[in-house]
Length: 412
Image (cartoon, rainbow, N blue to C red; front, top):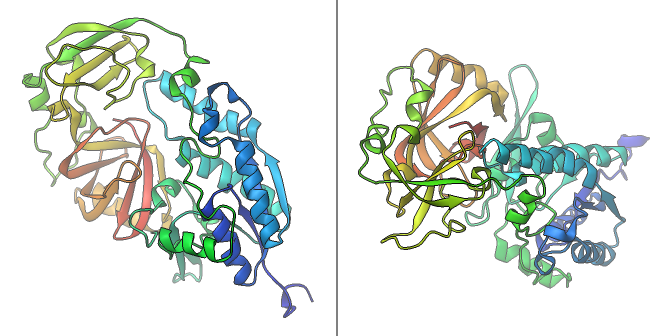
C-alpha cells in the first residue's frame, strides 16, 4: 500500500556530527515516529593545518557511531572531502585573494549539508534531512495553493543559528527538519543525559563546518603566496573618515558608492610591513606585530591591488564603523521569493522599507535597518545606528521579526 499504509514511517537522514545537538535531534525524530538513519560527513582529509586536539573528525565520527548504536539506527560515513574542497575551500582561497572574507559555515550549509548531503539522503530514499541547528521552520498555503516555507529564529536566543542557514531556498527548506529549534540548549543537554548519550557533556565544536579548528594563516599559505607590503596608519581625525559618515537621504534612491570609506583618499603614514594584504581582514587586531602605539592597532581596510593594509588606533576609530552596506543583485538569496516583488516595488519606487532587522555575523544582536535600491538593482541596507567591521565577503541576513526574509554577500 506504500505511503497509504498505516504502518508507514517517513524516513529522515540525520547529519550526525558527533555533537550533542545532532544526537538529540536524531533521538527526538525517532520518538516522533520517523525511520531515522545517521550519516556522518567527512569533509576534510588534510591534518596539516587542523589543530588535532580541537575536534578531529576521527573522534567525531566515533562519537556519532556511538550515538547511532545507542539509538539503534543505521549509520554510515559519507566522504564529501573532494566536493568540500571544490565548493568551499577553493572558494575561500579565491575570496581571500580578492580581499574579501568568506563565511565557510554559511556556504557549507548551502553547498554541502543542504545540497550534496541532501541529494545523498534522497538517494537513500529519505523523505527529509535533519540537522541539530537551533532554528525553526513553518509553512502556509498561499492563494495559488502552493506551500510556502518560512525560516524562523530558534527559541534559544543564545544559540539561534538561523544566520548560518541564510542562503537556503524553498526546496531545501521543504526537505529540512530542525527538531531542537523549539528547545533551549540546557534542555537539549538534559535530554541527552536522561537517555545516557555519550555526547551529553561534549563541548560544542569550534572552527570550520565539520572540520574543526584550523590554523588560518597556515591554511591560506597553502595557496596564497607571501607578498610583502606597507602598513599605513590613518589618523582618527582624518577628514575623509568623517565625510563618509554623512547622512543618506532615506527618501530617495541612494548610490552604493557613498557607503564606502575610501582609504586611498585619506592622509596616512607608513608604520610597518605585512606579508600580504590577502591574509588580513577588517577589524583584525592580532597578527600585525606593530607596537609602540598608545592604543591597539586594528585593520581598517585592505587593498589587495596595491597590497596595502590600512590600520587605525582603537576600537572607536571612525573608519571601524559603517552606516550601511551594499549587496549586488546577483548575490541576493530570497528565502521568501514570494516577498521579492512586494519589496522591489517599494524600494525601487523610492520608498525605503523600514521595520526590518539585519545581522552581519553569528552571535550578533540584530539591528534596525532600512532597505533602498541602487542604480544597479542591488540592495542598500542602511543602518539606524553605526555598525562595526562590515566585512566584504561576509553575509548579511535580513529579518522581519523572527523570520529570515533574504540574505546576500556584502560587497562593500
